[in-house]
Image (cartoon, rainbow, N blue to C red; front, side, top):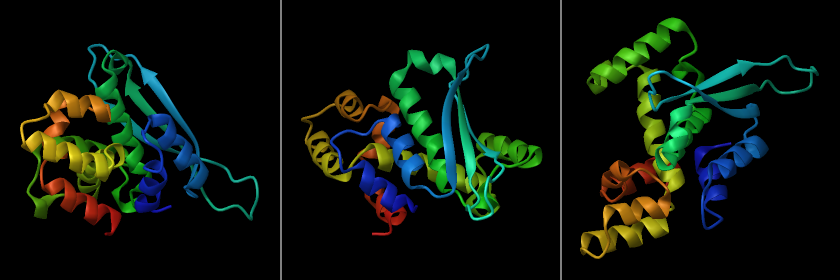
Length: 195
């Protein structure tokens, strides 16, 4: 399944939930098997999540290879539903990552953490870090259908709508609204959807 097909299926309904995302991925993404979303207590809470592919044994030589998936998230996010929604959506977007961008071993994961800390220049970015940035945009595109987004952006720019109203409508953290209403959202959306 391509990301553009995923978004079309999600945006066919009026609202997008994490359960919808899991259902669409489960039904249509050939490379994925079972998808689990698992809260994990962290002390202190970190507000993060992690997408993990779990190897599976095929039961038939005729089956295509697939991966089961676990998304582990900080249980404290249950107290922050909009942040949890965005974080889980972002992690689910890793289902579309090509294999070279998987943080599939200890060294790649450590390098990813360092890259997140340092935000390297584009020419120094690894495929793993580039995928991490891309999942942020994919999550927003998936959670914010372009039609309502355009209407709300127009109203926001005219001073008729506040950030918190846009965040409430899309069920995302208020800090993401700066990206949703920015002109670059359309460019990123077109690039990710192949429009």
